[in-house]
Structure formats: structure tokens, C-alpha cells
Amino acid sequence: MAGEKRLHVVTGKGGTGKSTVAAALALGLAAEGKTVLLCEVEGRQGIAQLFDVPPLPYEERQVAATDDGAVYALAIDAESALLEYLAMFYRLGRAGKALDRFGVIDFATTIAPGVRDVLLTGKVYEAVRRREDDDSYTYDAVVLDAPPTGRITRFLNVNEEVAGLAKAGPVRRQADSIMTMMRSRRTAVHLVTLLEEMPVQETMDAINELTDAGLGAGHVVVNQVLPSPLSDAAAERIASGALTSTAVAKSLARVDVEVEPQAAEALLSEGREHVARQRLQAHQRAVLLEAGSPVVELPHLEDGVDLGGLYALGRRLVEGGVR
Image (cartoon, rainbow, N blue to C red; front, side):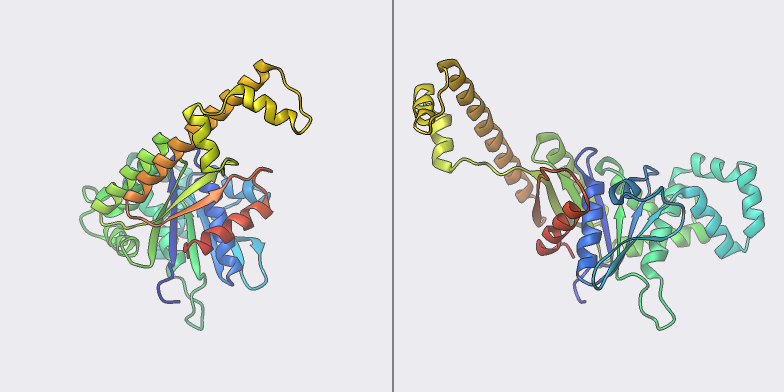
């Protein structure tokens, strides 16, 4: 559909849950009737863990299905991508494997990290563009669980990375084609964060870096949001000191809960900490809104991340406009 993305790149500071968000987004899009490919490039087998399946080989495998859609998964590694690249463009089938045995491929991808990123993003590029015999796309959308925000601009800006290595030839042409896709309106880079100072600051820095590189930011996904059980009036009473430990003890006594004065003071102290934390989160939320990117919030999953929880988060993402 017009306006919908073909490639969703999901990044975030380590510990913010970017892999969980990427998996949830894939499920949310599949629930909309789409066939989705979920890719990872960091070798952590995070997809296999989230979907409770065996470790993924370099092969697209279905990991989930909805009434009208499906999620396929692929763990991309540079060595396998280079072998495939050599087989497709240079017809080096057995010769490519011989190079692998001699360690040439490992040497090439280690000494030239820019080339490594071209290979990883190149496989994503191929999956996004792949078509069936009837000219329809094989995948309606591709979701990439990408490297963290500290490396995301360098990872995606492959043209810049290979500029000093390949000024012409197939590697440079591949990089140019990948950059055209990355800068397309059909690609979005979503940033996952928590309402904490360091992740928010890293998100803001990443948005600026992406913008400077011509790589538009998509949604900011605020993960693991805990709602406050307190009304604004109650929070203000706690913060201002209007609520005393004596009043807390009396309120509990009215519901037949007797507490010692020290316990009532401890409860009130926890309340003050909670209010302070909520206000700090509100400040970080305001900082994110200033960036101008659309923001969608996901709740903290009390029972942990399981398939049902991923579907619920996926619905929130799609309803929030990530599609």
C-alpha cells in the first residue's frame, strides 16, 4: 500500500529491547496479512531465542504464521553472504568454498569492515527487491534487527564506508544500490529507547547522525513503559510533603491493615521515589518529543516476553503507525 514501508530497520542502545521490538513488529505486520522476513546480523541468534526455535542457519525459515500472513527469519553472516555473492555474480561456487577453506573470506571481512557491512546489508537489499514469477514481491516487508544506535549510521551508510576501498567495480555498484534503498521513502529506521537519560541521549544523537547522513529516522519506540497507579493529585501530595506517614497509617487502618509508624514512613518514602522517577521519565519523554519523530510507547510485560506478549506488542506498534 502507498506510504507503507518495505524495509524496517530497528536499532537501539543495548539493553533497550531492540530485538524484542523487531520480532514484535514482524508479528504485527504479519497479523495485517503480510509475509514478512525478519533478519538479524549480529550473530546472537536472538530470533531463535524469542521464537523458541533451534538456531537459525543461513537459510530463510518460517517461524510464525497468522490467519493471512507469516514471519520468516534469517540469520545473516558475512562469510555466507560473501559465498553467495561470489556464486551469484562471479559463478564461483566451488572456488568460493575453496577460498573459505583457505581463510581468505575471513581475512577479507575482517580487514575491511566496510565490505563486511556491504555484504550484510546487501543480503537485506536482495530480500527487499526479490520478486516471484508473477512479479509480486516475495516479502511484503523486511524487518532488520540492526546493530545498536552507536554503530547504526556507519552500518547503514555503506557508500561512505567503501569509498576508500572501492571507487569502482561491483562492490561500489552494490554499495550505491544499497544506499539508494536505504535513503528511499520506503525505508524507515526505528529507534528503540527507554525513558532513561542515557538511552534517550543516545537516541537523540542517532537521530541527528542519521539525518546528517540522509537516512531518515522512522518512529521512536519507547519500550517497557510502566504506568503510574497514582493520580496527578496524589503524586503532588506525596511530592509536596502534604501526605504524612500518619495519614498513610490511618488510611491503611480504614481497610483493616495495621502498620507500624516506621513501616508507614517506609511506604511513603517509596512513594516519593516513585513520583520522582515518574517525573524524570516525563522529562525524558518531553525530550524525545522535541526530536520531531513520531513516538509510540510499549508497556512493560509483567510476565516476561513470550509469543503472546510479542503479538500484543506488535499490535501496539502497528496501531501506533509503524507499518
